[in-house]
Image 1 (spheres, helix red, strand yellow):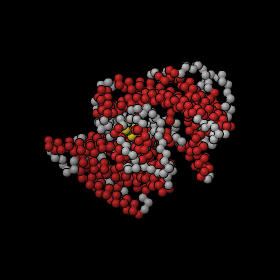
Image 2 (cartoon, one colour; image 1 turned 30 degrees about the vertical axis):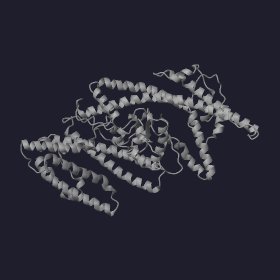
Image 3 (cartoon, one colour; image 1 turned 120 degrees about the horizontal axis):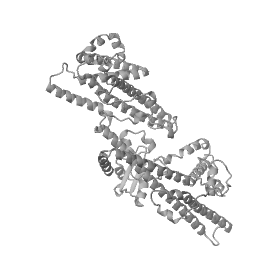
Image 4 (cartoon, one colour; image 1 turned 45 degrees about the vertical axis):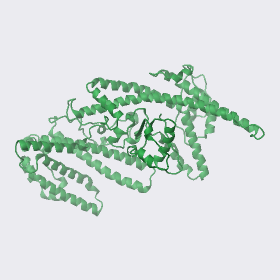
Length: 624
């Protein structure tokens, strides 16, 4: 089920104690499938069973008796995690959870936060009563609002299931050649988490290092076949040194303006000296592999090289005119730079994504209630991440400019659909910023959707991996919507059963009052019985009204709802007085009297004012 479990404790305890104590009762009750959502579940879930056994204050807890025990990260918080966590701990890829987001327990904070301000001057007892009264009212509104909430959830799940299934079937038909292999991989991963994750794309972070090793192997083969290179530094090593030198220049340009103390100044000067030496070291192999660049190298001002090496032009093949590039370089050097630039761009884009995720996490932390010391540390870390983000974005733009100069017409391979222009407005996400447009109009930045493409052929492994990930996501999305329908229908049934059970409990309380000489006063007893019967009647009426409102929608589902058969079919046009009163009350109109002949069922519940009346007055208003 999608209900959130809250463990109330009077003193701070480790999460493992709270979760394990709850799990003990669930396991004893026969629960076999458990999903725990936690903001840092990717780390917290490691060795959970062993930690439970090591906690001596806990009763014995046998996790192995469960059919499955899974840990996930809630959907809002998972955007701040890396790609590996998003593939492994994502609720969207877990069977049986429907559209659960895992953030339900935090929704009350929008209301309860205001209580801290205007109740902090109260005494302990008065403050306790205010908080209890507010949360009791909140809980009651949630119960009454289940009618419209569950109905809306079911409508969305029904429509979403149809739409997602069409998309999944369409992609399956388009790539039928690869689907059996993808389905086999997906099934294997579902059965055994140690199998390769089908939701994980090839990580471009190590693409540059892998390419360097590949180029060294190619050069070794070339040496064995032909002859040695004219310099101890091979062409690929020369370009690697050039790219590393260029990266050092970029770092000095980005971070140079942030020198604010003597130690930073000394470090900055040391980096400049090291950069100047590296540029000088680069020139010897460059004169051999790029003979046409000698006049350009000799024209560099030595004073500029000594004082501001970050502004010195390196004159790599991409910086030479396209008309004379081939004659100024040895054969194959421009293509070699293209391959390295492509891998460098992918790595830089990956670092941009990592930095943005970290910034989102730090931003959320600053908005929480933390001490000033922690806030200052968080701000300092945020500044460092911002520097890394600027450096990665600058490296990406330099790489793209070089790729565009080397292969404007994709002479060395496709890149225009992958290495897109990175504008300042594109460096955002993941997800929607609070200051941006509404969720329905939100468009994700391309940096989160672009996938590396080394070939235009569908047989390319990287392209197949991208297609596989998208196909698996579509299949899981369609399954989640189907599961959501089943879960919401079950929650509707449990809501009705709960109301009926609550009604029986109130009747039991009314009939179990003590009678006789030692009993309570007859007048008081009559009042208590009347109140108990009133509460029982409220529960019965809510059960009947909710089912009547859901009935026609439940009939349209693609599967049969067995428990619906025990209820008579309500009229097509009917408006319940309870529903109307709830709607008016939440919209601020305290006139519950409506014409019962109106022919529209409306269950929408608008957010209530935190300074609302007590639960008792609310009940009297809507049930009068």
